[in-house]
Amino acid sequence: MNVAERYAALRTEIDMALGACGRAAGSVTVVGVAKRQPLEAVREALDAGLEDIGENYVQEARHAFAALPRVRRHFLGHVQTNKAKPIAELFDVVQSVDRLDAGLALAKAAAGLGRTLPVLIQINISAAERFGCPPEEAVRLAERLRAEASLRVDGIMAIAPLEADRTAIADAFETAAKTFARVGGSTLSIGMSGDWREAVRAGSTMVRIGTALFGERGPTRRAPP
Ligand SMILES: *Cc1c(COP(=O)(O)O)cnc(C)c1O
Image (cartoon, rainbow, N blue to C red; front, side, top):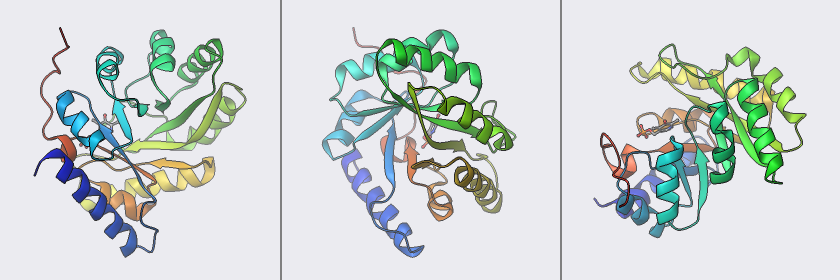
């Protein structure tokens, strides 16, 4: 299968999984995770109808966005406070706000640009993950950041344990769904290539798919000359 075929097949499978748990077709947004993927593959998915792309690194994203059609851009990487300005300039949504100083740095950068920046609170639901705020602190962080006029806190993002059994993954997503219910908003961003089915069952409204769409990631993406 080429990328366009994989994208079409994925959309169909997601709609079937949604139907199987009584949810409406089309109620999950697919973010194509472009990090370390060839830009031709990303372009092919965009031509096939993909409307959202995710990147983890500012420098890599800058090159990619300059070469790709304008679609919705999601920042998925760790938010370093000294990168808040380029992140707010380059991205439409920041999914990975996991602590107050990162959120406040983004708020300041967005205010400087005269824009409102949609963000998600990244929570930690996996012992193997370095980042993410503890689920029990998410409501407080969301409340604090909702006091910032230049931010809009839209919900929750989380990464499940990667090597876990299916039950542990489902349990982790359950924690994310419960936290989302308390934080409120429009977006529960859970589910990646290996676990989107469990995520859809737990109530995901947004899945972030890299390898299942574009193939295995390379060690780096070549920057254009
Ligand atoms: C890399 C990445 C993904 C995509 O992972 P795949 O397993 O390739 O689908 C999703 N979310 C985040 C935050 C990532 O860093």
